[in-house]
Amino acid sequence: MPIQILWADDEIDLLKPTILYLKEKGYDVTPVTNGKDAIDKVETQRFDVVFLDESMPGLTGLETLMRIKEKHTHLPCVMITKNEEENLMEEAIGSQISDYLIKPVKPQQLLSTLKKVIDSSRLVTEKTSSNYQKEFQSLFMKMQDNLDFNEWAELYKKLVYWEMELDNSNAEQMQEIFSSQKEEANREFNKFIIKNYKNWIKAEPGKDAPVMSHTLLKNKLFNLLKDEKPTFLLLIDNLRYDQWKAIQPAITNLFRIEEESTFYSILPTVTQYSRNAIFAGMMPLDIQKKYPDMWRMDDDEEGKNLHEGDFLSGLLKSTFREEVKHQYVKITNHHNGELLESNILNYMNNKLTVIVYNFVDMLSHARTEMEVLKELAGDEAAYRSLAVSWFEHSSLHNALKKLADKNINLLITTDHGTVRVNRPSKCVGDRQTTTNIRYKSGKNLAYEEKDVFAVKNPDEIMLPKGNLTSSYIFAKEQNYLVYANNYNQFANMYRNTFQHGGISLEEVIVPVVTLRSK
Image 1: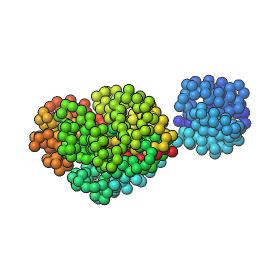
Image 2: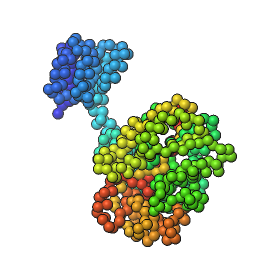
Image 3: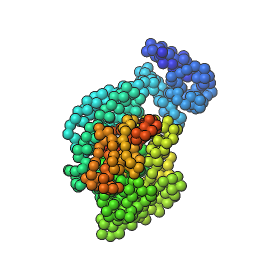
Image 4: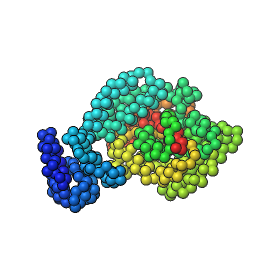
């Protein structure tokens, strides 16, 4: 079916040669001589694009444009005028025109505009698909190489880039191919983690180990504290690298990126372990030994992250000779967020202000439990979109706006990510076994060996144990652990939900970004 064009111009008779040219190129043109007729035609016929002369008697092109857009928001409109005044162009652009042409308009200009307005989506899809096809083999070959932890981080960044590009271009066929490639990447990444993890946690970051949860502040924050300016550490719980890339434009409107990198979350990739390790600057087993009254095991009823501020104070005291004036702020609800927005400038008096924001973590848990959120966040792209929508309308965003013109350091990071799970794996444990579906800790665990990374002796990976015979298992890739009792019920409940605690690129490799005032 040919593209349908509505062209409104009071000198339409003079444009007959151009209209004939467009018809020869396969476009159907409906000519009208004024804005009122254009509005009437739009109400009764389907058009793919509207050309509007700005200087028509009666309703001007701008007035016609606004009337059309009131009911047909997404109908592309192109303004054509002799007037090159800047304020007119700005007003037209502000009224959501798709393009702006200056008379006299050549036929080739019209063709170019039609390609851009009508075919842009198709052309972008084709170009993105073609580019990804070229990159596909290169990515596949890299996965087969003996990558180190830096190269795996770079590979994951490339996968996130292509995932977002393919989502934005609606290249559905390529998206299916990409999903298979990401699954393959996660299979190889799991092998890599299982082979190297035990050596990393006892090594210093550098050549032999990546920056991990327990070495994050030492390697990414403490140098910033040498500056005279105030430093803010913003930890958005459960923020994946792709979610960071999605909210990055809103943040870089306010601050300048000095360094964007990643670190590796420790196992299990859950708040209780990874975030306590971040603020204590040590692995969970060492935290338990140094702070036996503060560490809580999985089966304890008390909150597992009640002492992060204490751990942070202890780490700062043991690292710096002089006292570092600091404050720890945790945001867990809307009211806390409003208080943060109101008080943010008061924190300028601190050398260090740590803000832990829990929204994304709450989103992942709520998505598991609420059917409406399952619909809203049905896939990776929708999950990113929800995070962006939250951030842009959040008290956190408003607080950062207040800091934007202040001379500060800002470090944005997280504790771990999440992965969308779709393969249930049966396991068995006693009553004291942890309830998380991406990892289990307990005694007498039974499981499908191919689906997990099993650690019989938790001391080897610096994790505490509930009793002498406790062990840990971590789900690989997109598996999730379900007990044999009521297996089908829970398998269906958790399928295609976002979970954390196990091993995947999405859970383990997470963002850490240093920013400064512009």
